[in-house]
Image (cartoon, rainbow, N blue to C red; front, top):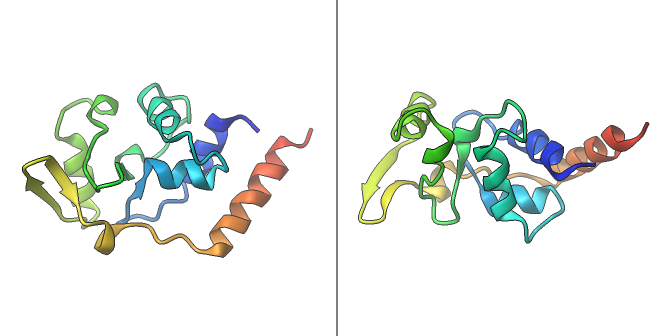
Length: 121
C-alpha cells in the first residue's frame, strides 16, 4: 500500500483531544525513518482529508503551520479539542505526556490489517 494512504489511515486514528508525532505516525505506517515524508504528505494534502492539526514534532512543538490557512490555526484547533498549548522559547508546544496519543498493540494490529486489506485487489 502507498505510504500516503497509510499516513491517512493512521492520522484518522488519532483520537480527538490527543496528538501524535511525525515519527510516531511513520513508525505506525511501518516506515520508521520516514517522519519527514509524513510532514510532506500533510503539507501537500497527499494523505487525504486528515486531522493534520493533531500532528506535532517529537518535542511537542507545533510545526505544521504550512498546512493551515493562518499561522495560529493549528493552535486554535487543538485548543478547541481541549488540548493545552503553551508558548515556550521554541514556539507553541503541547505536553506530550499529557496529550500524546499512547497507541496500543491493538491499534498496531488493527492498522496492519487495514494496510493488508487495502492493498488486496
